[in-house]
Image 1 (spheres, rainbow, N blue to C red):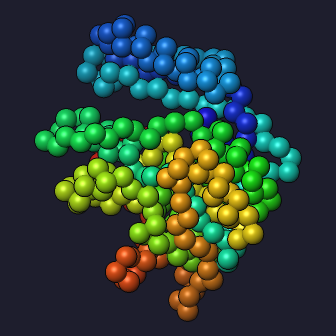
Image 2 (cartoon, one colour):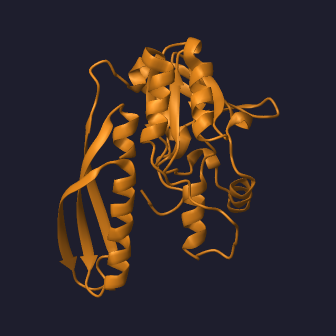
Length: 261
């Protein structure tokens, strides 16, 4: 549903498919399905079709679920990374990295304990608020899933042929998430989120869009801007550190931890 929302669509319907490992407790499957139903109802979306496949015990890691979504995009909405232009402002809808940090701790593979809740949530209302506040000034939206915020920004820079300047100190990160990253040598800019979106918006509408985001989530923030490419002519993302340094942010090509989304 979030993939549809950040494309400017109103989510309407979902299909789903379950790959179930033989021996999966029915109570666990029932809990998953009931959670899906509650969330679909909250989003005003119908689950219209589904399928199941059972694999032998030990071959399915419990359960895998895939979905496909259908949504309606208004004729006057066109979003995409290629639409960015110099002077546009970069915003994020809230603190980043909580989802991947929460999953990492929940797996119990490391002896760390921290009170971190996943940022997982529906983005349809947030995306609608952005479009209502920014109109045609909204260039692009993306949910910051695999590869995190940094990878989204890299994809935008490449698509538009521009340079993105990011103030790293302005990127909101919960102290507990920052502490986990520091202890494990992770970069929060690359941690996956499941309820956060990045927005590129024209300067004239940036303040209104940021206000709309903060009405949804107080930790929403301005994080940078779009500029012309430098003398190298290469599209890139530059992170400006709190002590005045600069570093090039690249796409996440491997993984900071096993894939979660």
